[in-house]
Length: 596
Image 1 (tube, rainbow, N blue to C red):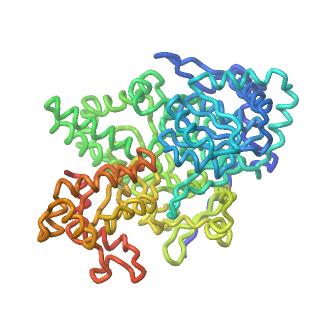
Image 2 (image 1 turned 90 degrees about the horizontal axis):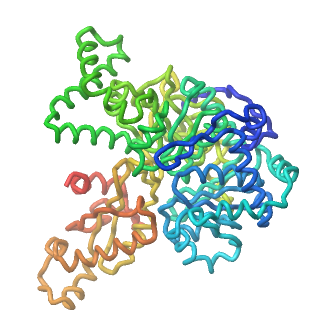
Image 3 (image 1 turned 180 degrees about the horizontal axis):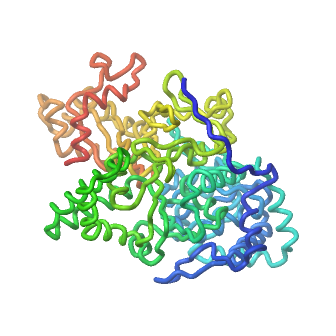
């Protein structure tokens, strides 16, 4: 057993809450720019005083609408300025914010809203409002639904004209570090997402220790970032809080608008998942190929990687320095310009970043600081620092966090970042927080200097290259419900999208062949290519996908010519699929789904 601890660098009193930073800054530095809000193709500055006043005005409306301290208010939206405003308005009213992914299905919206007991919900678009309408009659506790694009924020603000400043001050001061600030739902192996109780103390202490302690070199005066990850994800949420806590200028964007927004906003650092960095690299390579400069780009990439590796082993020699300098003019400078021209650092989380990609970007001039964490650890548990980086690892524990490797190799975490528990789920809380340590379900190793390397996954949760957590069990259960399907295995850990292996039920195939006029002698291997069978499985996959978001949906599948059996070692005696064995035996079929 190995353990590594880093003491907290920033102490936070038990009376603290998330509203302290914006309202204190508004009083002490009212004219300081804290956010930039997109206004057409330009960005308009939002001062500390303006943001605090907006948040207080919306909070007054929530109070007037009957939202009490501790009540839950859901947010269903993409990342935008209004999300941050509503987050802080909800906290100012003493309530609990419940994020919902913008891509969620009606079934997922119903579960999260119902399980959390949300009294009110903000939905971004008319399409979101339509999804909420489908399930609202099954949500008796949901008293209010407001549409953001339909003027809902202004409507709520208008409700609060009779609520006094003193009442709002009392409300926001009623919350302490121990109180729940947000319920962030995360996928579980049983299929139903669990609500992680993240407290005011979790967010404030983690943000201050991460920003002022772990990556203080990034959070300097004049720092800014453009947030484009979903704010329903705990990683983006922690960054939102960290910018407000640290006085870092925050802007909001999304993937479709990202490139022009980066060029105009010009952030000093970025937060992203590995898939974004993969897209930047692949896009640059494809553009070079289209321009007939593919060979130059690949040589430049190899030079950047070699240069970065040399930084860890005595430094680059004169020849490598000269090559690197030449490619900086030809290639690297253009890549930096594509992200605004001022980015020196980027923080990556949510999934594993390849070592080669890490070296490439550092060689280009953008150092990616890879970190590790979960929803239950308020995002970061470990991170590489500008002054202590080891590419290929996820860094050292952030200040205030202890990491331990259990006897079976599982990564355990304890500290300021660990959730209070799971909402309405004492059994899951007791299991996950055994002996005061959070059991991550991931396997890892700590070196002597405290750098953590993730080596595998103990629990069956897939994390795509874009950082989306996907529980395979619900999809597999729905697919197996189809009469022609015997077994299936959903895959996609570390991949661009979710796929599946499907096997056919031989007993069901006999009657099916007879009904469809197929020769009785047709084998499973022949049938798996039959257009009518493919159409049946297409329908089953579509039905399963209807219960999840787009990011969790199965994009491709392959029908195997054999079934999973206990005799072949693919099933346990209790007929559970041995995931690792199947993935090993059908590695070629899985690979073909991503390379075809």
